[in-house]
Each structure stands twice: as structure tokens, then as C-alpha cells.
Length: 254
Image 1 (cartoon, rainbow, N blue to C red):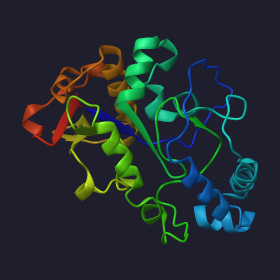
Image 2: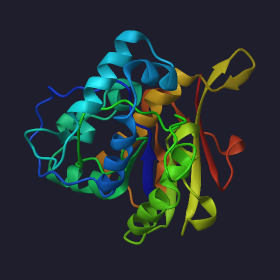
Image 3: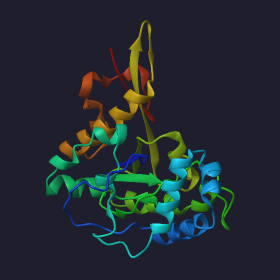
């Protein structure tokens, strides 16, 4: 069982977090993307990423500041950097050694710039969403740039799992980078729903928070199989067998 989540635009590099850090597995590919991004002006970046002038200037500065090798002085572990709705549910500051080891083995963060990150992989500041249409020698967008590389990394991680199952807690934009036909395992979709009058609906903000809570639940209890996820009952959610199937687990609350 290997969980995947999306990154967050909100990043905190002032978060104190002392751990044995690791290097991103696809960092050399990230360097190639940075080289492409460095060719763009502030105005070009703003148009490409559809953002304000202020954010375009900030993003341009981050691109220019990017440099390797990554060290504990110029980069921070991904799980400590990313903030936002999903990450608000992951109580990483409360984790001991066993939880950190489990999380490093069982969680992957998909990323536009880094492709895929383990929680303790070092990263520098960036802004590059997976859906960005950044052209390179490898193709017209990031999905083509990453090709099979992210899937290959997932396959390597799945070899060490009791069950070769990806638990998809990422958004569609990010999980699309996975080449399903080349994946040496299956994908379990997770859905969180809220009761609205006489029906259940997925509310994005609540679903994002619940994804983080499920990661936290798995880490705290060191779950080994996807079936154990059915016992998740945080924040009023519970497993709904009548709304689920073999490749989709649905959780709902009133």
C-alpha cells in the first residue's frame, strides 16, 4: 500500500524540523526544467502560469535562486515545507522515529517540478503546477516531460509493499501523471462526501482536509493493507460500502 498526495502552493521554509533527510530521486530532471524556466521573463512566467505580477516576480526569483546540490542549509524536507488543506491534517510534528520511517516508505508527493518526492526529500522553493503547459525538448507539457519517470519511481516503491496498491489521495491534475498501463500494481481511488439534503456530494475543501487526515491515520496506526483503511472514522467520516467498490472506497458524513 502506497499513498500519493498532491503538493501545495503554500510553502513554509521557516518550519524547524530535524530529521535525516534524503535527496529527490529525479532531481536531475528538475534541473532541466529549471533551465527551461530560466529562459522566461517575469511577464512570460505570468502568462504561462496565469498569475499576478507579484507572484510572477516571486516565482522568477525562486527560479533564479534554485541551485544544487541540495543541503540542509539551502533546502528543507518536503513534508515540513508544504502547508495547506491536505497537510493541515498530517500531524508530522508529533511523529516519532517509527512514524517517520513508515511515512517515508508509504507516502509519495507528486510534484510539477520534482516529479515525485518522498516526505523527507529535500526541496527548494518553487511554483510549478503539474498542469502547466511548459514546453521542453521532451514535449509540450509536464505530463510529456515526466513521461514514465514518475511511474517508474512508483513501481520501485511498490516492490517493497505488502500490497502493490496505490492509494490515490491526490487531485486528478497530479494523478494524471501516472502511466496506468505501465504501473505494476492497482490504484484505489478514495472519495469523501458530505450529506447535502437528500444526497451526498464531494466538497473540495473538506475532501482535501480529509485526505490529509487519512494519511495521518495510516501513519499513526502503521496500516499495512488497504482493507484497514475502512476503519477510518476521523472528523465524522465513515466507510460507506454501498457507495464503494473494489477500486473505490467512499467515506461520508452527515
